[in-house]
View 1 (tube, helix red, strand yellow):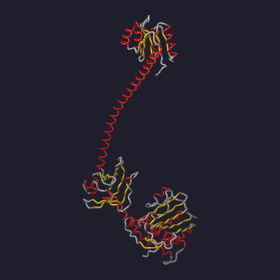
View 2: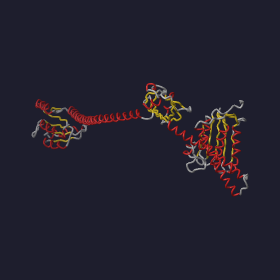
View 3: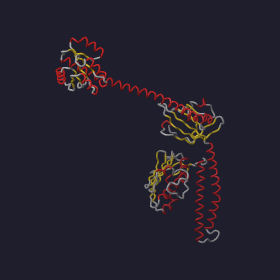
View 4: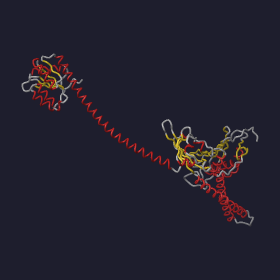
Amino acid sequence: MDTYGKIVLVDDEVMVTKTLSTLLRLEGLKNTISFNDPLEALTYLKDNPCDLIVSDFIMPKMEGIEFLSKAKDLPTQEDTTQILLTGYADKENAIKAINEVGIFKYIEKPWNNDDLILNIKNALERTALKRQLKEKIIQLKKANDELEEYSKNLEALVQKRTKELFESREKLNAIFTNCADGILTFKKDYSITSLNHAACELFGMEEKEILNKNFFEIVINEKNKKITNPFSLTQADFLRDFSLINYKNDTKIPIEISLAKIENDNDPLIVAVIRNVSYQKENERLRDDFIATLTHDLRTPLLAAISGLEFIINGTLGEVADRQKELLEAMKKSNEDMLGLTNALLEVYRYEAGKIYLSKSRFDINELIKECFKELEILFKQNNTEIEFDFDSLEDFSINADRNEIRRVILNLLGNAVKHGGENTKVKITTKKEGKDLRVSVSDNGTGLSEQDCKKLFKRFSQGTSKKRSCSTGLGLYLSRQIVEAHGGTIFVESELNKGSTFTFILKNAAIESKVLL
């Protein structure tokens, strides 16, 4: 309760107003203003809102009922509480007037001070509560208006969003239905839940025949590669080397598959986009056949040219001057380099076309590495490159693999370490048996490679660096990868600029127990 509200006292008797003012101040109600003329009081009340008006009933210039009625009509006194002071003889008239005007209380003279103070405090509390209630009503009305406005806007927004969703759904349905690629969705158990017309055409079956089938049972994983669980994907995945059977035409179709996860509360879905890559595969085959034919046809004249140059250089066809011999040696070297490139291209084609058949046998990997080093020893000496062998402590480190092909990989890794490591570098080759697996690493402390270069290092025609072009074919590491993967293994590089590189290949299940004899 606000016990310090403003109180206006109106009584024609000065003694009454002074007595009342003193009493109120003693009770802590100090914000009190007294008037002995009701007209003066009205003038004041026009511009000064107050909380309580206490007026006498009988006054010479204006009766209390009339004064309180006019005060109530003032805009500044809309919420002000009123009390009328009256004598016993005027009680009935006062009650009648109170009912007409709406006065809060009337108090008979002489009054009891305690009752008077209690009524004044109640009146002040009434004013405060009335104003609070009015403020709450205003706030409530404002909130209600805002809610109505929000409701109207929300309804319009819902209609707009519904229309947009409908249009978006129609577009998606049109894309899903008319897309040239096959599109289907499957659940966590890989059962197919929906598919478009293009997917049905690819499989040569009706939609009802494909629904609920296991997706990974109706597509063929050509290379039996391990597939990451699609529902653990954080980004789209892309699968190559897959195919499917078109049961209508009884044909095998090569495909590529894009997988993307759709969150759907606790029941996510995977969208699979299937693309028929028959045309691309045929173009690749024609290209590779052309390269294979070209490289094969190039070998004969190159070999003939090299043999002819050797006859001339050796003096078989007559004496050759030193300056002529230098030129012929350069021509022979150029032809040998071209033959090497031709052979590399032919080998790459044979691996990609699946026309390489590994001839596996038992041999000691450590002995093979030493033989490879002997072949490159002159190159190591020319570059002042040291070699360190860190072989597994096995006396007989035999493996089962294609000796010639693994030899090609080791020669390539050792050769690269010398060529790209620069002068006065150190090369370390390590062999290690890990269960039934063989791990071979070739390390150097050369210039190293950036992360960007490492990512494309084992791709076709990659020359190991984006900064400069080397004189190599860019096929050595690509061919090494093909050889290692043909053995069911992996090859990778770990490198850091200015700190060197480590090339490692691992052959799965290649190591042979020492006691086993073939």
